Length: 485
Ligand code: CS2
Image (tube, rainbow, N blue to C red; front, side, top):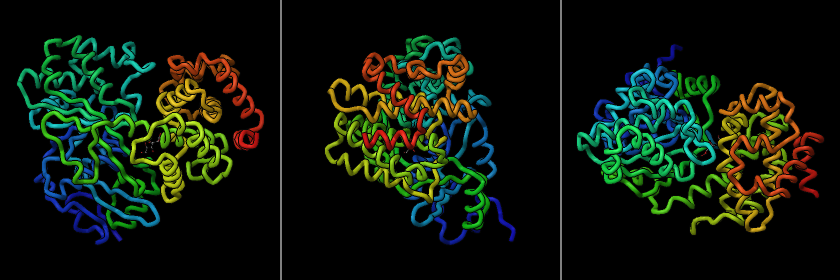
């Protein structure tokens, strides 16, 4: 049987069980510009927008921006930017999403990105550019990074999200354009503030006179985003084609669970995301904290231990009972006592639910996907809880063990050429110089020196001890020994 490629005209060929846009694609517009139109965005925010479009809110389509590669644009352009979301749980559901109207590639057409951002019709700018897209070094913007240096020197061809937004705001201010909201949708504490700092830094160099307009007309907000979304492989592509009757070269899979909690801080028009299941709150910080310290930290711990134990996927690591027990106890015994949770959230239940979601074997999620950029991730997922525990004199032995496991992960992944991290070269150099026995260097590179854990000799000595123990007896045995001690 010949399978047609997915595009507007193939919508009619989809199997009846596949949900599809109930709106005319040509009748929607994009008041949202999104930086980082990757899988997470396509399985999360774009789905909320698609729901709004289905409800007749026709302006909340999306223009995506890729800051680096053209791959997603190339894949989606040939299919009218339509793609299939495969929701994989006890049962499988398919939904074709039509919310993305176009994707611009920054390095190819920088001026088109700036112009689109500057249009008065643009109400909202959102980001999923991952931790490294914020160029943070020890919590502040790394002004020595070549990309930041580029945007400080000239805004003719910006490379960073800060540069693009700053260039557009200069234009918006000159044209007295409508107010704008910039909303962070990354796993990032106070992401809105970080975006504001970066944009102001660049404006301070190129156009100080724009700053007062920005202060009055631009809101920088944060949100807590949640949906486990693996990277796409050929198996998914083939399964989707078989099940839907149409060939999509860029489907995306995700778990059934989805959550989006948004800081209610908008300048100008606020998209009614609540009509699509999102929640607006005044104080976003406790929600960010819970997500980063429990869900994301749990992922990072399982990714390091699972990788060391030889697992490919997170759900496989959880089949090893010492690893499952260790992760649950690390979160319940070390993180929970020092983390205040929102009043309507029960910490223990949240942790149980998260671990249950991670057990979803219908949605294989790679330990190396979580291990990507781990040097950036641990700065938000582990260090703050450890510092809080140390200052409260509360137990953080599990987290010390988790840091030791992370160092072992970095070494093993680096040796196996599987380390995908902005600091991969630096780590490889350390390892080559024979610094293998020193957890200090690895943690220092990952920005630990900004935290008090780094100068707590007892804590660091225990990290070192666990590190040697893991190297001596292997990760799973070391975890078992830890749990029985
Ligand atoms: C994960 C997250 O890959 C990772 O580092 O911890 O992407 C996680 O799956 C999402 O934040 C879930 O919402």
